[in-house]
Length: 353
Image 1 (cartoon, rainbow, N blue to C red):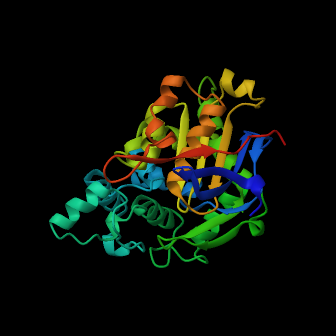
Image 2: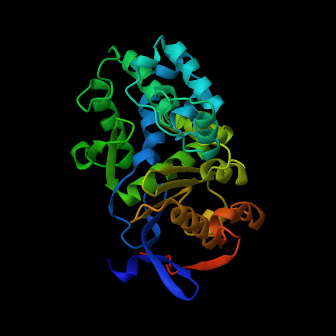
């Protein structure tokens, strides 16, 4: 790895302990790269950061209206949730709306993302099932979308299912790429997950924020802009559904009070959409902006540090809002006795291309 991708160095005492390499793309709503670090075109598996785009594909089947999914349901479709009771209960409610059973889900149960939830499960000897999957909302949305397309539930997760062909077309269109230029693999939850250049992930999030901007003061919106606005508002109005308590995505969206949407992808990928403002115009943006970040070694704690630092350097929001993320931005490095053992230094510079 070349040193021009070195984004953060951690020290124990005065000794270098870890070197973390990363890539960043900052784009506006028409895809102009405003700032970057490393390779903004790095082919990147978006993982769960792609969920808002997959939710768009669900909306465009007509499933939300057909099955009465509300905005909290839509937020859960975009979620990598903590398996809190509210998440599991809403998954069951969504299954009821589409007339499905938990056995129809093709995701598996797993340990919760939340340590608190895991401790509670262990105490009562609970074995997590499919509804406990952090991706359960996305899967139920896919069940509804399959029915809306006139298909049954069988094989909805398979890459050659008509539903997934539809998802691939929507994903490529949103990325402004040919369908066959987007690569696909199988995600941890057993659904296809896309790979595309990092700046295209930023573009997706810029379009989400642009959709929210367009929805204000415009009498007639395109169908897609209306859908993107609904996804943006579902996530920012129900941030607790997108992740959970003591989770970065939830705390980020609460902190910025609807002006920023953010979503984690596994193995340290992140997407952010920021609505147009004087701050985005100062950065040279045409409208809203999107930010994408990928940490090469998959370290999510490092990812949160970098995302928070990028928001600081771009001066997004107020100092008070950014300060609400301090525990992720510059967390103290402590041992088991509370003694500070080291520190981290940011070594990246955002540059105009």
